Image 1: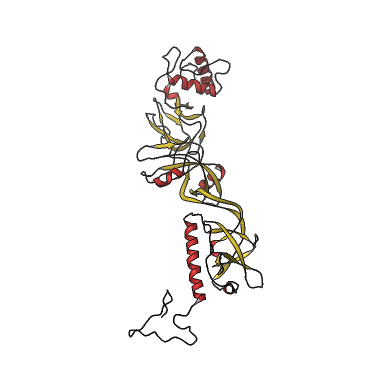
Image 2: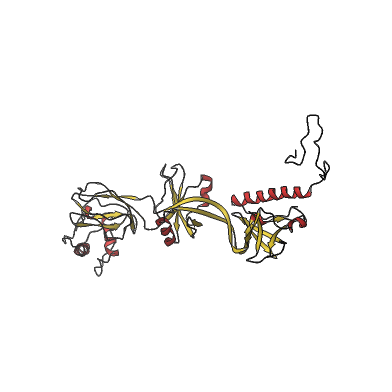
Length: 400
C-alpha cells in the first residue's frame, strides 16, 4: 500500500508487496506525483500568508514540468477572471456598527411629563428634548448640568458662562454686545428674555435648572426613552442619547492597540459589501474606566477587560443603510501595504515552474490552456498581484 511520503507498506516478513504491471521500480523517481505534492505545499503556504494578512513576495520554487502545466484542466478545476483592482494587507478585525453606548440624560424638578421624543430623533441645541407640564425642556451644549437658578446680580460662575455661550450661539444675544464670561449682566437678562419669548414661556429673565438639559455633544440622537408619558418627573434618567453619527467599534488585543492611534485611518468593509474609510477617535476600557484619545462616544458591547476602539465612519449613508437592513457587522483593516490598479488572480491559480518562478494557465476557447509566466507581487486576502504576459479579462485555471 502506498504511503503519503512515497514509501510502500511491507508485509510481516519484511518483503515488498507485489506491484501491478507497469509500476515503477522501488526507489524510482516519480516526478508528477512529486509535483502535485509541491503544489499543495506552496499553495498552502500562500493561503496561510494571505489569511494571516501577511505580505509575501514570492520566490521561485520547482513545481512541476511545463508539459503537465499545459495539459487540459482536470475535472476538478474551474476558471477565474483576471481582474484589475487594488490589494491591501494588514491586520483585520471584526467589529460592529452602532451609534455608541449612550449618555444618560436626567430630569430636574417636578411636574408631569407631557411629551417625549422617539428613538432615532435627532435634537440640536435650542430644541426641545421633552416637555413638562406642557412647557419645553431645552437642549444646551456644555460640560456640566445646571445646579442653581441663574439671574442678574447672582455670584459669578462657570454655569453662567455656559448659558451665555449657548444664548450667543443660538442668536439671542445679537446686538447686545454680550461677553461670554461668568457674569450674569443686564444684557444677559435681555438675551434670556428673548430666548423665553421664542419658546412661548414667561419672560422672567431667569434660567431655572429644570428648563435646560446640558449635554457634552453639539447634536444628539435619542437612543432609548426611559420615562413614560404622564408620569411625574423626578430626578432620574429620562433618555439615553448618543451622537448622530454611526461609528464602528472593535476590541483588539492589548498588543494590537498601538496600531489604532487616535487620528489614524483604517479601511472598513460593511456586511452588505460596501466599503468606507474610518478615522480612529480613541479607545475606552469599560472595566476600569481608562481611555485614550478620542473626540466622541465609544460604543459597542463586549469583553470589558479589552479596550474598545471607536472609529468614525466616513460614508454615513452606507453605514446607516447597513444598520437599517440589520447588518451591523463590519471588518476593520489596518493597512500595512497596498498595491493600487494591479492585475489580481486567486492565489490558487499560481503554478510554480520547474525552472523557477511562477505562471498561470490561461484558458482560450477551444484550445488547451497555455502556461504564461508571471511575476508575483503582493499577496493578501487569498489573492495575488501578478504582472507579465497577462491581460485584464483573461481566464485562468483554478482548483474548483
